[in-house]
Length: 264
Image 1 (cartoon, rainbow, N blue to C red):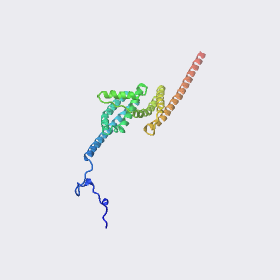
Image 2 (cartoon, rainbow, N blue to C red):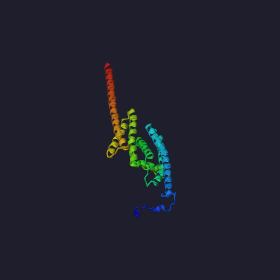
Image 3 (cartoon, helix red, strand yellow):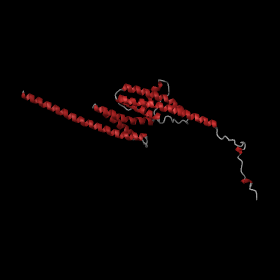
Image 4 (cartoon, one colour):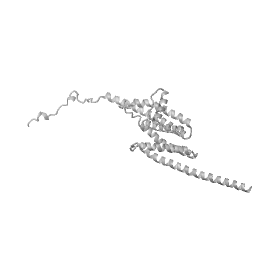
């Protein structure tokens, strides 16, 4: 039988020639994996700290909204200050984590960003009740800067999405506030709330919002605006009825006086 061509013979792997029988060749850099495990563990610990502290920010923001709606403006202001301080406290952790993820601030997404939205909502509501105007992103970021300057640390700056999310949520609280003012027949305050929602709605029409959180909140604004329009209409009707009743009462009073004069 003819011998097989040498090219068909089993080829030896050059990298395995040094290894003896039963030995395992190391093909990975174990030290690099150890470093990645350490980084992963560190980021996980940072994430837990951010989530836990973000709950405090959100809780304080919700409490400030509750206080504002009950006309306890001083308490609302203190709660907002505490929430801003807690949010500022987390910023170095978020920025440090980004150094390990190619600059991507992944810890800002989720709990922290949601807490900032809630805080923005509380700040906008408190500002509106106090000044009768909707605070701009610049005005809110200036408040964050003032708060951070007390401890000489970097200040939080709201993103456009965080501000808009808080702004749209604010309109829901504004509707509740307008109902409270309507019960006191404060037509001017209710009209101001309606105008604020209407102007926010008009500005939001300029955005091409895709399906997501902001889109859902914007859709809710449409119904909020309709409710406010209905409240204004009901106030106008009740105002007209009250005016007719007053006129009728005055007429009856005038007739009685004339009759008395005639009897004299």
